[in-house]
Each structure stands twice: as C-alpha cells, then as structure tokens.
Image (cartoon, rainbow, N blue to C red; front, side):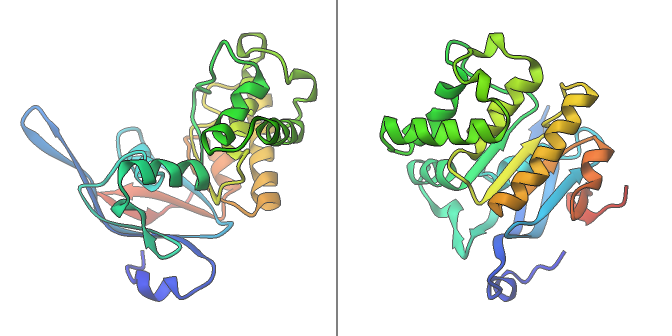
Length: 238
C-alpha cells in the first residue's frame, strides 16, 4: 500500500488516509500485534471489501477507520484533518455526522418504531424533530419500508430489521459507510437484497463503502478486495 499520504491528499478524491496505524492487544501477558504500520487510502465513492479468516484483525481495522477505537499510534486523516487529535466529544460529533455503521446484528432499540430508530442520528446531531422525521421517512422509503414505518423491531423480519439499520446508518448521508458482516444473519434472498441495496446507495449517495465480510459474492461486487497479513493490508483475490 502506498504510504505517501501527503501526495495522495493533493488529489480531490481522497477521503481517508490512514498513516502508520499500529494496534496491539495484551493476552495473558503476551502482546498480539493486529496492525503494524498500516498505510491505507480510501477515495470518495470507493468500494472496498476486507476479507480473510476470523481473528486476523478485520473488525479492529474497521473500528479504527470508523473512530470507534483508537490505534496505539498513527494518524487517520479525514479530508486532510487528523481526527485522532480530536477529543472524545468532538470525535463523537464527527462520527455521527460523517460515518455510517451497519453491523451483523442490527442493534435497533426494541421499544422504538422503525422511524423512531432512524430519527436518532439526526436528533443526536441537533436537528429538530420535524426535520429528523422527514429525513428518516425519506430513507426508509428508499430502502423499501413504506409500510413498516411505525412497526417496532420485534414486528419486523430479519431482513427488514437490517434495512432499518441501513437506513439509520445513512439518514445523515455520511461520506463513508462501514459494514461488518452486514448479511451474516440473513438468508440468501435477503442477503442478495442487501447486497444490491448497498451498491445502489453507494452510487446514489456517492459514499465510500468498506465492508468486512466472509461472503465471496458480496466481496466480488467491490472495486477493491484486501486482507490483513502479518499486520499489513494486502490486495486479495477471491
């Protein structure tokens, strides 16, 4: 991977530039290196699959790119600004505004309706309730849930729940969507629906898309496929 962030940052299409990222964990007195001096660039609108066996650090990498976790060292430049220098409050505000997340488990608030779940990011962002409601309804209609706006998550199918989670992740039109095994709990039909929807929304919203997946079919849709080998990101072929 090209380590020259400064050179790449001169390009208008560079969204994220990771520089010299390192991350290790202690396990029963020994240190396990997950990422070692990782340099990685993500362009606006780019689609990337992170593949490989369990335990190699795919989710850790995704969490660091998404600022859910901090590396031991290194820089994470978002359009030229190192967001790792932000304090926790400013980092949370940045994350809410600029990054969308979808996980294997939908993590919906069970007592809330679909539209109430999707309204949460705009409300946290400080938007008024009327605007949050309008944004939530618009994106829920886009993901095909016109007739499920006022259903609580327990009354939705697994595929519908994941579409609500996707709508929640995209309601503020983030610059990048990070997805960790987004179809891992779905049957083939719903998986294919989510696959198609992710690619359509990537084009429509011009957002970058990074997906951790064991699903070869989903990975094949991405413009780049990478894996982690000895703490480094490397191009992969599936």
